[in-house]
Amino acid sequence: MESQARPLKGAELIASYLKTLPDQPGVYRMLNTAGDVLYVGKAKSLKKRVSAYARGGVHADRLTRMVAETAEMLFVTTGSETEALLLESNLIKQLKPRYNVSYRDDKSFPNILLREDHPFPQLLKHRGAKSTKGIYFGPFASAGAVMRTLNTLQRAFLLRSCSDSVFAARTRPCLLFQIKRCSAPCVARVDETGYRELVEEAENFLTGKSRIVQDRLIAEMTQASDALDFESAARLRDRLKAMSQIQSSQGVNPSTFDEADLFAAYSEGGHTCIQVFFFRAGQNWGNRPYFPRHAPDMALAEVLESFIGQFYDERTAPKLLLTSEDVPGKVLLAEALALRAGTKVEISTPQRGEKHEIMERALTNAREQLGRRMAENSAQAQLLDGVAEVFGMDAPPRRIEVYDNSHIQGAHAIGALIVAGPEGLEKNQYRKFNIKAVDLTPGDDYAMMREVLTRRFARLIKDESEQVMDSKWRRPDLVLIDGGPGQLSVACQVFADLGVEDIDLVSISKGPDRDAGREHFYVPGKEPFRLELKSPVLYYLQRLRDEAHRFAIGSHRKKRSAAIGANPLDEIAGVGAGRKRALLQHFGSARAVAAANLTDIQSVAGVSETLARKIFDFFHPT
Image (cartoon, rainbow, N blue to C red; front, side, top):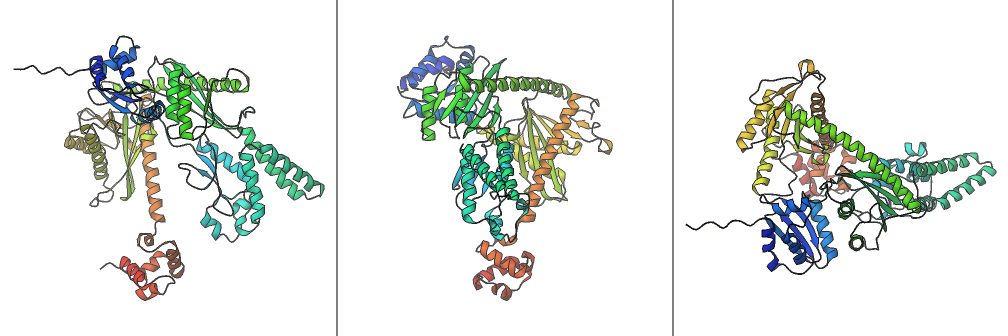
């Protein structure tokens, strides 16, 4: 009997690819026996880069481990090394390989948008694709920073924030006019020429010409005061005060550059914090800390280089990037960012002057933020150790999923899932489930829990069977359910039906009189138990349960509000905004339309005989 050939692995496997690899730029992926991506890399020459791995024995410890685990490699050739860098950043962000630098990214950064598609432009917060015609100012580090700036800009320039439909329907000034945050162009308190002047002042201020705007307003205020028009002078004074408030709240405002993103990286104990500051129009528009995951022995400059590549995967880089470390591949990185931005991008490490001083302040922020983070992580690790001990787990859980339902007598039912782990709550992993079962008894919590768990873990089984490497539905270590033994029994049955194993199940119920601190815990095969009143693990589990409840309630309220605001006329083909308005104006409400006869509906302006029949049949199905 012939012996089966031993499957190749590690450096031996990598060497087997050399015969067919081209001497061209490209991207390679290294996978383990389970199909998980270990590493994504780029190369000017795929053949030369892979041959370096095949030689073995010359790598850092982490690369030696990575090579030893490699059971398969995948390759993509590109037209240039720049294209390879862009593809590498995209794949790292998508796949999050274990041996690459990766970080948790969230929503896109918000901007302020000054629309240009209306005679009286609207000033508003904007997030996402820049598809609306107008001038965008940003990015801002957070929605809070945008709203604070936006509110102050309204006081400084009196530009409208209402939607076009509200603007068109106004017959008298709104409250914003009364509190001096809008010039009320909707009711002609300012004409188009006067409003355009306000728009130009706002544009100048937001593009760094604030001194010109302020000097002009000071001159106008002095002139009004000299003419004894103290009311006008006071209005101009208030606008100047609002502008000064924006500038003073932004902290460090540079004088040697107008536009830049600043990256300050600090590392300690194998962990890194990267503080990103945004400067636009000579003003500081906020900062945000990031904590990329990477191997402890990676050089800080290498971490920073990889982070910047991923950071701009779906963003446009400004003309200048300031970095605390001299990144080794900055020339190639700058070329790649310029290709995506459509303009030249410079990457610089300041050594002296104002830029260096700002960088030092940013590094101080990064160091302090990392210290706070490490202290929090230490406490979090102790809590997870405690959870493992309480529930008899083999190891501290890396992923805890908590489930809860919300409804009112079965209406607008929602199932909610939150996720927690070593880094705390992972809000980008939260999920909500609209209860779909049509035969569900209203208020049947058991049936709702059964549907939610079945849908969630059927997806897990499917992804694992198909070896989906970038699944967002990763396997949890612990499932915590808000409820008593009944809910736990439902969960156990779902797991048994789907063949789900090696996941710990626990339910938590409030104690007598729903007192916090007297919760009972139910674990399959064990007697119910309680934890000591002052146990840190009890507080932690209470917070998780309460967070799941908060998320479920919030999702339920949104669904209920959407249902309340829905209009059945929206579901009828051929009834657009104009005809809907005509029907509501004629009958007063959708309920009255539903009660109307065919002749009455046909009498509405713009409603033909055919459409009237369609509307009537919609409300009176045979």
